[in-house]
Image (cartoon, rainbow, N blue to C red; front, side, top):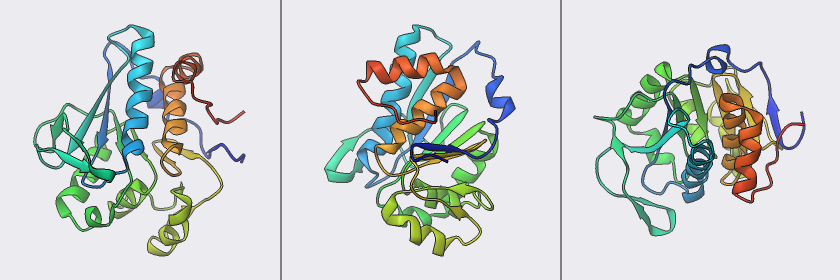
Length: 217
């Protein structure tokens, strides 16, 4: 393991062999008081990668909320989701973000949607405390997972069947990938671009964003 990222298993083979005759749908779940960079960082990574490829068969990234109405993220940042639970495209890559997440854990509709969507998705990722939502949906048992450094012990205590690791930017367990807090979601998303579309595109994307990508070497 190094302090940048950690791959604990080989990349999921069915992900690596996805036919690229269409864009991969990247659905990012947002909610009230979600951390702004948790969703806007990954959104920027995948949208920039798509722009650099100039191809219709790259990534189609969009925001999904529980309901079709404006969402107020942290700091009063208001935004409109592209879709809600009742109607959204098939999601190939689901990203669940962090923020003030505790209320989400009590919503049966949210937990069941995350579980059902994850079952069909090829990759499921969390940013920051989004890991708590995946854990509540019963998706992370016996996996290595990370989250924001402030919440490491809470995640361990709340979900003892998860192997929570610290001091890393992201953890790759094949289908399930998790990142540390806030800006670490950018590192993880670049890692996913590398997995899904190649290292060259991921490096070009980081350069275009003027972002120093902390990755495995």
